[in-house]
Amino acid sequence: MSLQYALTVTLNGITLAALYFIVASGFSLIFGLMRTVNMAHGSLYLIGAYVGFAVFDPLYMNDATYPYAWYIAILAGIGAAAVVGVVMQVAFLGWMQGQELRQALVTIGISIIVADQLLANFGGNPFQFFAPDILFGPTQVPVIGRYSTFRLFQVGVAIAVGVGLWLLLNKTKLGIMVRAGVDDRQMLAACGINVPLVAVFVFALGAALAGFGGVIGATAQPTQLGVDVRFLLTSLVVVIVGGMGSIPGTAIGALLIGVAEQWGQALFPTYSVILTFVIMVAVLAVRPQGILGRPD
Image 1 (tube, helix red, strand yellow):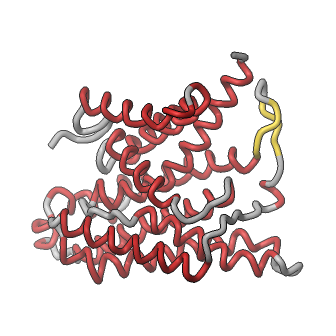
Image 2 (tube, one colour):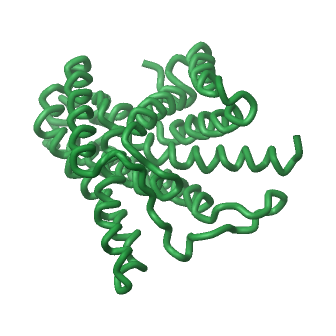
């Protein structure tokens, strides 16, 4: 095995981990911080991708608007996922707080309905966004050689998302309210804070990150119905490995899972998925709360 091959596989894992982190960070906010079970998180990823592409396609075909099509598609995907997230939280999940089984069953039902509606309205054919000209084509990487510019861009986006979320949760009044609400909702409400409104905002932010990940993921590789299950399970594993509600932990979990998945496909593709769950079991055996999770 050459050094170039090893570095390429590792870089593939890092860029895949970047996508996993963007999606899983939203899941970490909803499930890890707010303790809301959302089994439709993968559906929010699909909603972002499909709505974004529905906006992108006609704009890209127009000579006057094609340079801006991808950026507008990102806004559309984020907005659509956030709106659906708000509806889910207000109409269904908000009044089920603390009822994990009921939340799981309701969101599974929502994910089935979303998949059926996307199939009915968009069909089942795979699709892919075209990256903006500035991100299109290869970039020369030392030792590795030519590598996708957009996939390198994914890493930068993931870092920006991670830093932004850390600052939001640790350096702002809103972040203090969110973290306080995790520990004691009744005390936060007694201080005059509108706890349900904070929960709606956090859910909308988590859903928006899933929709954003949908557009990013569908630009990096073709997307179709069915990938929602993959991203839901991956997000769940990443959050469990990294630690519930920990953004740095989610980053570490995404990096471990992304790199392990790519090396697994390179070494033993038939059984590569097993490596992901081996990592999860190994981490939980040593630290049941996850790598950076807080003990209960």
